[in-house]
Image 1 (spheres, rainbow, N blue to C red):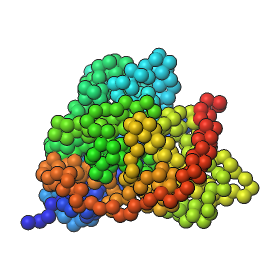
Image 2: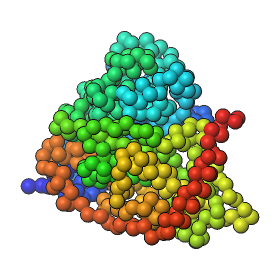
Image 3: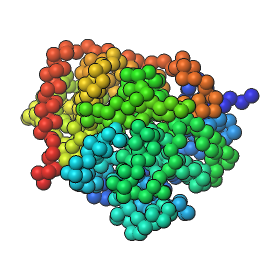
Image 4: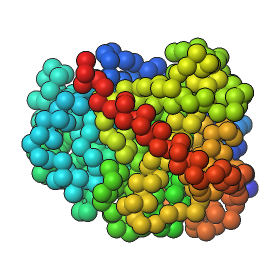
Length: 499
């Protein structure tokens, strides 16, 4: 018999990927294609939904060709996606009515302020576990309905669909037969009640969003249907859906309560498994659904850092300090420390635990002796400082300090960053052998649904760490550095309000 495979579609903020896994959780082939980032106005970030689909369908076909396999050797397909990014399309034609409004987009920050002034922050947090912020989908949907001609009337007539990227891809893969999402994605819209696990009528009324637009909420691991599109020549079961950070949590085998992971991507996303009950944060973290399998819902606490690896992209493309992101490590390592420089990468505001859309990027401590190497090192350390802020908030919320943290994402290849993270946070940093944890999580959800793997325990025996970083620095020195970081952050806060 021919071997079988699981196909994971990993639709990210800057690129679309497809990853093919075998039964040993090994990557057989991978294909990736970037797509355009659109910035129509300051603080606005958009994607073309049709380009999201075209790049995703391209890499899906390409990975099968690269692996040299037949489509009938794919047992199932799982989808993971950039979350909160909002797409509204015509139910009859499948054409988007507007560009995708990306999770980084800040255009609705002022509207969030008006809701805050109405005293709605706590009510929204109680139901959704979320901070009232432009980050989430609800205000983006409302903006499209209010600003695209005839969109609201069409939505009220049931002619328009809303979906996060998982819903959009499933719709396209099934020729418009499935309009679904899972609880991990639904819980990021600010329209989903994480206690009742249903779309919330009070929130729909608050944001003036017709219920008819919304997808059906299904489990994160189940067979929903099969592909039915020209790009896939024969039906393949679609059996897994999860937001990218929840998929990474699952892919990192953080299945026990109080296990944690950090994904270092465009942003940084720190997630802690909190078990079978939501734990509403007192420290500006998000309570969210991690996944739902077999009727059982698992929850998590999350801290979202808006600018992680993208600060390195900015040094590369904006300041031209180096030509490749990989060059940031040797440049930063060429100096012993930052020379007293602190860089706060609030390029799109600050996420957890500050939640300040008006914060702006700040570099302090510059002297005549400051070089590009000091700035590069300060940028790498800033990524770790932001993660550390969230880890401390999680400990305050739960009363529990983890002894280790699992890591994934592009930036974890940077050994200097990983060692500084271990030194600063004081925990073991475990880098897995399969760095594509997000895609692996999507594959695991799909594979478990079709019996490709029989249990998470079976999967865990297949996966081994690649390297562990243990803390080596003086904790007192790390405390001193942390205090200076907090002072630099203080100087960046609410800066745009001064304009």
